[in-house]
Length: 110
Length: 114
Image (cartoon, rainbow over all chains, first blue to last red; front, side, top):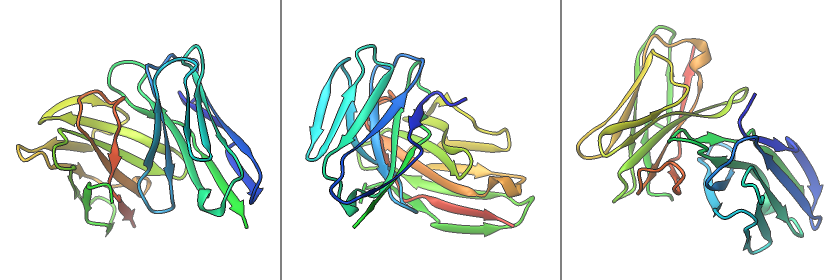
């Protein structure tokens, strides 16, 4: 069982559609991060959410941290082919051990 | 470019062998993290060093070891290699000692064990 479960695991959508990716845990996190990874490359940090209920926007991407700080979501509006990639949530619930989520592989079809 | 460098980019070796992966963090970063990414396990945290000292251990096998040197670069040593060790190995660096702080990833080393 993974500490951070993401859903869906795979997502294939048409350009211009909206989508939401979920990151869930039974543990409380002081903060959660979202990364995007392209094939053969290292993950790139998109955002860090810290406060329960916090909403952060990055152009067409909206990130939300759950009120109880156990879950987070990523919403993409009007998806573009350049959004294609593996989206990973990550955090450290206790101590200094860092966990990545199971990942959501997004494909945006032109 | 994250500023984190890793060498080599690709490594092909045989079972039972030993290899060393190298990582140079971003200028000014004191923390180095090592991760293993395989298709079936996803991205797994291995170990974290801060300013030369080990801070946290994750799912790191006893056959694997790491260290961070005074110049802050780090090496991950993998020994008695098995087929299942084939994976992408990433290092990441961060300015802080807390792993919840932003981490910047290198391009990775792809290890193939034959």
